[in-house]
Image 1 (cartoon, one colour):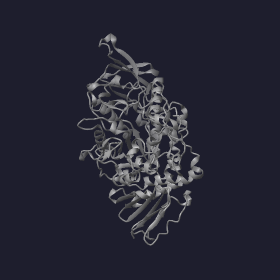
Image 2 (spheres, one colour):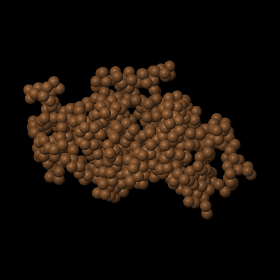
Image 3 (cartoon, helix red, strand yellow):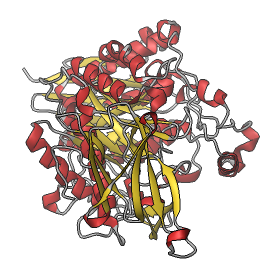
Image 4 (spheres, one colour):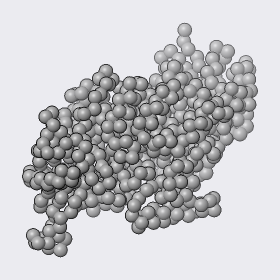
Length: 622
């Protein structure tokens, strides 16, 4: 079977005449039939080259439930009377209902975003959300009702945590088992199409978080069909997905088809690829590079630009370097090190991987160099780590909070319950004045205090017990701080939902207005939204626990003073005079700050800055 960029050629698809074409990659099987339960029909598939099976029929219609009756060799001996017959869902189903696949016609939705050309990556201001906890209803439909709010906030792109079908109704999404299927409890595939269309109508890009490094544990029968996994490599989740071992071509096609489907059939603008460092591939062409190559080909057909954003902890810019320069071609990557340095600068604990970070000195380094560790010795890893990256600022995504950094804490506490109100404002500003792409996590903008805990809804008792045990062992050193929330209980899920009454109240409302002003400053000042890192210089004043950050564009210079100490600091700024305009003072009384008058400078350019606050000055050429 040849990959066809213009249409999906795996799973069940409908042609222009309404007939269903079914392609199944299953070299491990000796016979396959499709079972259409409501019609009481069973139809055999025909074996094709390279382990594929094929059927074209007009018997099955959109939204019919179906499954495969598969026949495989017995593990005991390869005798016909020992063959095993089993009913299984389609590994490439787009919609699932318990054990059944549901036929879905992606072309049935009437898109109205024909004029949508997307936005440039450098203009992405990202809002990460979890569908199940973002709204009380926890559906794609309910997200649509919040789009005007996000536009008013100033967001330009939403990032949706994984939506591939998982067991039960509650999960972060990283336990998805069917990569092509859209979670039924969120509304299924057509509701996702409606959401993306509505986002484009509002001028919002859509990033979808996808997991290509493992499959979830419950309901994972893929090995019965084909060699989806390999013992050649191992990951934290067990045997690695087989991208480079015997029989890997079908696996590679499967995931390439998946990426192309989200772009082509669901009009997604960008994919965030989870933990690419756990994708093991020693092929001559890395799977990420091939996905990039195929995505570029799709752009030539559709005229739309699609982005690939990697999560990686390797500090290896090979992932984000262009294909023509020997890289894998990812358009951007998350850098946790900016967060880690910011976290320590904010006075938080230095345990685990945080022990590698020295607060403002490393935060200043990340402002300047993106990676904190770019070749020096890491105590946490006990080795030299990373290499320098000269890539432009738009290739790095930074944050003060995200789902991992909150949800992987024992109690799932947000920063709003761990640092002062003033420090929250300072941390937010640190992200938005950076020369990188800023990301905020849902509810952060009003200082939401509800936690974001780890939650599951598995059906297998042994698996639930294993997850509970794993969580207890992970946080054994912190048990004195409280009881670990039971991830299987619905309470862990409901407690993690946003409280949408807070943004209209008290300090929550003031914080929301502060975020709106920060985002507007980012958009409206060239020195902040120009992501040329050559115009960025950060200097740490260790004794004062303060950073002076300079950002430049062609006709503007901005100076940011970031005071992470608990004292007023007096900082000398060269050439600062009354010609400079004060754009932001986070300690202003309108943000419930102590409100020193920071606009009166001495003749030698000395500036007083309040504890745990930020000052932003601008000088524009006439």
